[in-house]
Length: 150
Image (tube, rainbow, N blue to C red; front, top):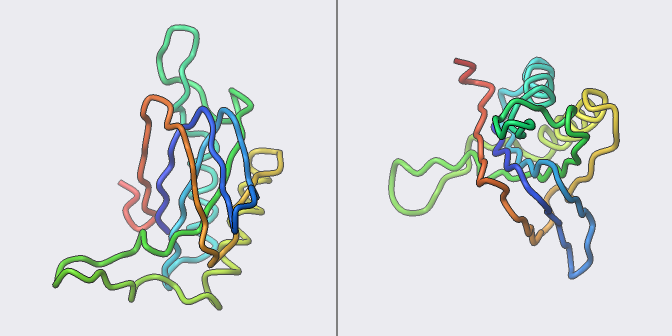
């Protein structure tokens, strides 16, 4: 499971010109799921993300988590995070999980993230053509891969 976490001052997701998710201060999370991902990946990742200290405290030091600042979250599925680009110029997405595997894991991730944060989070729509807008605050962008927990 691979995520790109962006600290935002605002973000939104549009599908067919309709806003389906809209937040102010918080995190926009792009998530890519691969065939080897399991509930263990979800458990580790949601705990890590819920406690990740990337918001500034009163001394302008990144020392606060999303929970601490009572921020919001949007989660957007993005299979292209597992693009393989070693050969040629057309990325291969062979590592990205097929919908029958990815959708249940995505839904479980969202539910577990809501439990971790103690609040509802917003999402895009799995497999939809989405237009994602954001103002990256900082900018702060962090990539986490559950297959590389170092």
